[in-house]
Image 1 (cartoon, rainbow, N blue to C red):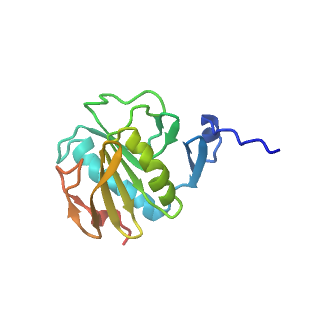
Image 2: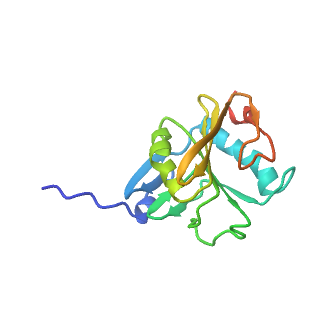
Image 3: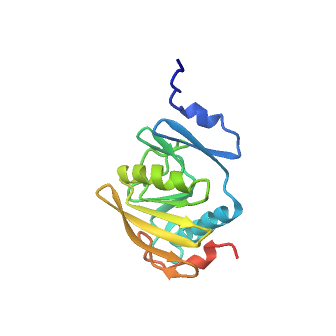
Length: 185
C-alpha cells in the first residue's frame, strides 16, 4: 500500500532553488521556472506603466500599491501573481511580513506555456473566491490583454485588447494604456 503524499507546506517553498517560483494550490506544490524574457518584459513594462500614474500619482490619480510577484496567503493557498495592486484606502501601509494576507484589489497574470493552464484553471477561481475585484491576463506571444471583473465570485470578461491598442481598462481606466510597450519587437 502506497502512502498518500503529504500536503505541501510553506517550508517546501523556502527549499526551492532560486530559479524557481513555487505556489501551494489546494495543498499541492506547483512550480515553474523564472519568467522568460518576453514574459519578464511584459510584466516589468506594465508595472512601470501603471506604477507612475497609479502608484506614484505622476500623470494619474495615485492611490495604489502596485507590486511585482507578491506572495499572497489566501485561505490555505499561497499564490504569486505576476503583478498585484491594492488600493491604499484599503491597505494604507504595507505589511511587515514577506507575504500578504489581505487580498489585492487587482491581479495580473502574464501567461506562458508553462503557466497558462495553472493561471486560468487553478488560480483564477481562487482569486475570485478571495474577493479580488479585477484580474488581467496578458499573453505576450499572441499580444493580448484580457480584463475581467469579479461579479459574485465569478469572472465577467470586460474586454480583450491586442497588438498596439490603446485602451482605458478598469480598474485603471483613468489613464489610457498603450499595449505596444508590453511586447518584444
